[in-house]
Image (cartoon, rainbow, N blue to C red; front, side):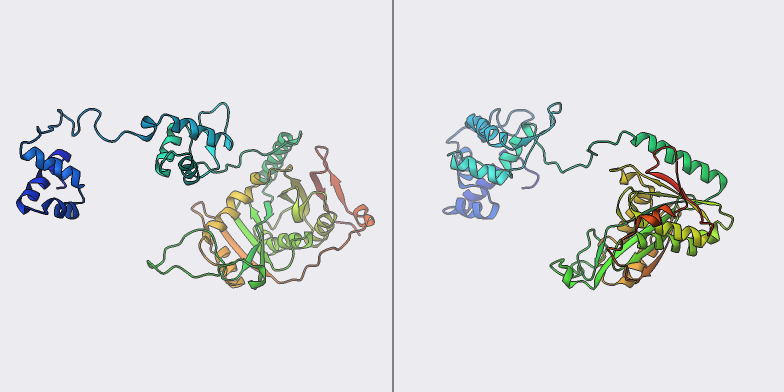
Length: 390
């Protein structure tokens, strides 16, 4: 049966039905799944009561044979379908691609209520033929751009090249998304025995967690190495600077023993925001402690994705722990510390249990006492903090 075309299969089944005699058509219909009218047609053809419907050369059916499409039988279907999707149609007017938020089943039900019986599969086919397609959101619109955006990028690039040429450290810093610690679902898939998925909690309620993990990373651009400090309380400026201090202690000091200047490339907001007083005050304390001048260059607003730490470190951490429930702080530290790439990335991870307090005010007098020099190019984003003499 599998090697026969429709014409040959019809005659074969009809011949077997004739051999069985009375009830043979019903019996063969149950066995083969072929409809009774089709088997009956084959029987009449074999008995000579109707001429054999031999297929044309190179074809199984005659030209025009088979059931007609719904839109051919009822041309109004497409017009009604167009009217249904017009209310929720979106797309680029210069593009042929369009999309709709209504499901094909909902549109099929609405057409059926209009008296036009149609399946959701047919609706999907009609939509494709009409130029529609299933599409997801794509992050492309960055919103209004700052007028100094490109100039700041060029300035950051020049500063990075300058320090790399002198052998001084350049690090990119940022906080990764906060994570709940516990048996919660983590996006992604991992290889496991078939039929034995890891069971996690059905709901991601914070009260079910052991706590939260706040990974703050410091990525060494030249060495392709990083130190990640995982906090447990709040992502504030004091925590961010402590994370940089740990990078210096565990990696920077040994790698750059003769460093005269350190360049930080940071976002313009968050715990290392350019307008944050506590950020600058804590950086001054760090500079006084390590005795190395620190220059900070902030990325313009809305351009955090250009920060190198995002696509050279944080994205690989997400890939490394995909599908793995972050059941404990120990598991998080181990997963971050085991992150590797083919280009040679190496990561150290530490747990920071310090109870950082929010709401600590910084008086204006402390800002005046800072040994901070703003650069001539966009001074709010570019500044250097030197050790205080007293």
